[in-house]
Image (cartoon, rainbow, N blue to C red):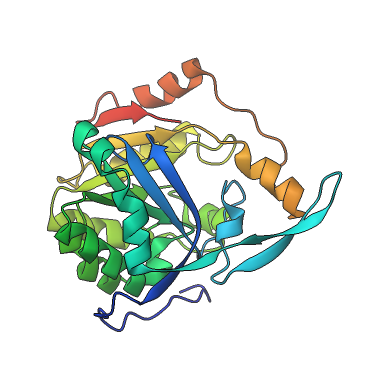
Length: 276
């Protein structure tokens, strides 16, 4: 799969002492699924998107990064946590989940990069009646999706670029596996929101949006599209972390531009939301 390492799934482990690696835990998140949520950011991702606003989540292991500012110093990103301790953190905001129809979202990085730990956390949340969402790039063996499907209430599934050569250029991987997985996942049921990161000069062309519509229309179980305006946080982090930035400085879209892109879906059956 384009030379990217994807961890092999070996089945659920029963021990609540098993551990995963996270690099952030965001409370009171309102853009990572319905209601008020806790978002768990898990380390590891096989893609290398130039616009990623969490580049510190790409490597699988905890790491130290030299922060380039007036007082340059190393900071640590990523910590090991047990399943039961992570559940305790998630449980703290149960009242907000219940009042708002929210829950927990597992994001990253790519949560499928730690699929065994992800499966355990989803199982724990299900047992404790906490709604779950998995925010995924779709770039993982479909076996992983099948293993967690019954434990997951909602998939937030990214669609970026339909042209395979451009997708390879901007993300480092082919989109074939991503599109194949989405087709198969949609056949399993109606628990997917397709999310499109709107990156100026990369994903925001009418041609790309038209092709996304053509691809999604036959997938009868996908009814909602979410457009994600460009987030400049990635630019700031890449500068601070001393990482290359091949895209340069991009502008956040005005509401008028986002509405224009949403209008492309007017003739389709999809509900379109703009979040950012």
